[in-house]
Image 1 (tube, rainbow, N blue to C red):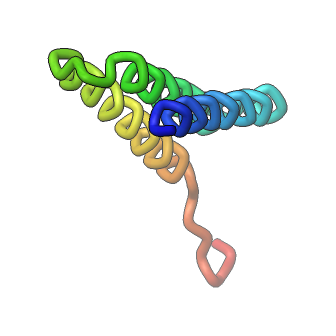
Image 2 (cartoon, rainbow, N blue to C red; image 1 turned 30 degrees about the horizontal axis):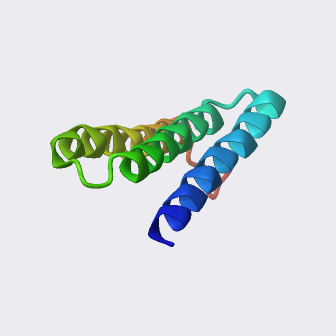
Length: 92
């Protein structure tokens, strides 16, 4: 059952990446392509954990890829918000 759930989570991450890719094709917003890449990385790491379940020598590599995926999400959010121009109340 544990292997099945790991595979289901991996599939869900890969499908989420496909949705973000579809949104990117419509808008060409860098946020969506970064989210797609992050979810694909997360899906691949979930799949790698399911395959190498009892092999601890690969764990540090898998967690490093997860860290990269989460950092990619953070960088994409910061990049998206950095371009926003604050509006003033007087309309200047």
